[in-house]
Image (cartoon, rainbow, N blue to C red; front, side, top):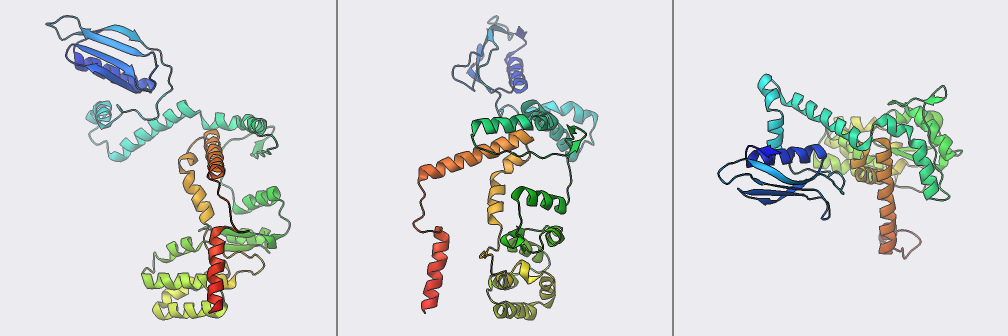
Length: 350
């Protein structure tokens, strides 16, 4: 195979690397010869050797070529840069000068989705293999229990995006967790207003709290400032009703409109002064959910099997690392709780 010049040959190598999803490096690259090897694996048999056919000509010819690869497709390709994109879409932009950035993004997004289907498989096919995945989990982890639930149409599952109500979700939760005594449970949410009537309907004796951080993010859109922020958090941390009322009086003096807005939120949902005493839980933030959610951000937009497998591997590695680290509590409770107890003991002795 011959090429008019060295640049044409290099462009062909780059295009091959992009199409095949491989990173190809040029080991030799001068005016007389070009040697290309696969950068993915040191023992990968892929090789390309080309040189000039004549000293006085610019034509390059491939002398040795092996297209076999022992490595897998690369996640990141160094040749798919802005220069390659400009050449790839130059003709389309020439035909349509009004092609804006939004249309360009949509084109790239469609290409990305098609690539995901090739690499990870389609959403429908992955949902169809959920039962196989469940059986593999039970086989690899003896004693594990895996429960799958899906919408059925006749004897066949219907795989589609389902926008469920909070009542439907709570019904599944109550069934799965076998919740009989609502007073033994505390639910915490962020901005989900629909969850309030759902819990009042299905679990009227359960306690429902709102994350104060999310409450404040809504509050500060209309009433910002450090003073109001400090008063809100002081009211949330207040452990007695008189203390809570004193902080709310401060807010009323500072900004009456802010006070009216906050009074619309029942104190039993966000202030310790109104929490139920039987739950023995003083949490104001849903940090546990937020921490877990931040760890799976790169998994949430993947197909179902890929998403579940990434989460499983993350949790497995975390558990293994914690065991290796040998983290052992010196007390019956965690270190953070011990610090709170010691601080309270010091305050009680004064």
